[in-house]
Amino acid sequence: MKGTHLGELEELVLLTTAVLDGNAYTVTIANEIKLQSNRAITLSTVHTSLHRLEQKGFVKSEVGGTTKARGGRRKRLYVITKTGYEALQEAKELRSKMWDLMPKPGF
Image (tube, rainbow, N blue to C red):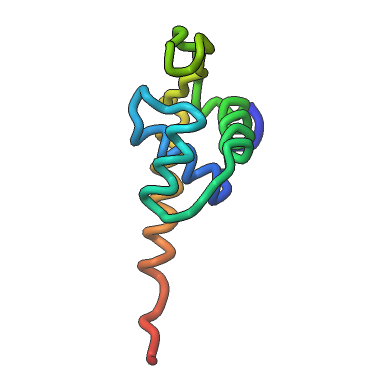
C-alpha cells in the first residue's frame, strides 16, 4: 500500500466521503465541501484526491447505474474502508493531542 499519511485535502475528501455515506461521488463531495467549509474545490482536484485515497486503500469505488439526469452516463461512487476510517481516527487523535499541548496564548 502506498504511504498512509493524509494531507489536509485528502483528509477533507475522505471525511466528506464518510459523511456522504454511500452517496459520495466527485460532484457531491465537492458540493459538500463547499457547503460545510465555504471552500471551493474543483472536480479534478476531488478526482485526484479520490484516486490517491483509493491507491492507499482508504476508499473503494464502484460504478453505479445509469440515470436520465446524467444523460445515461454512470457515476463512480466511493465509500470509506475500515483502513480509511482508522486513518481518520489517527488524524483526529493527533490533532487533538497537539491542540491539548498548545499553551494558551497570552494575548
